[in-house]
Image (tube, rainbow, N blue to C red; front, side, top):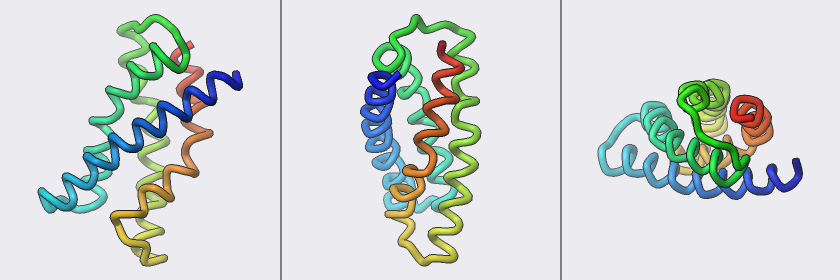
Length: 120
C-alpha cells in the first residue's frame, strides 16, 4: 500500500497541476466565479485522473463499472474542497487563485482510500 500511496500522490500532483491550469483558465480568462470554476475544473480533471489511477497507481484493468463509480470518489472531494474554498476565501481572505492549493492538502488521504476501494 505504501507504493500505491506514493503513486497516488504523484498522480495527484499531476492532476492538481492539470486542475489548477483549468481553474485559472476559467477564473482569469473566462471570468467564471471561483466556485463554478472549481467544480468545472474538478470534473474535467476527474476523467484524466481515472485513467492515471487505473493504469499507474493501482495497476488494475479499467472497466465500465469502475469508470462509472469513479466520480463517487470526487463527491466528498468536491464538497470538502468547496467548503474549504469558501472558508479560505470568504473568512480568511486567502486569494481565490491560491485557496485551492491549500484545500487539496486536506482531501488527499480521504480521496486515496475511497479511490482504492472503488478501483480494487
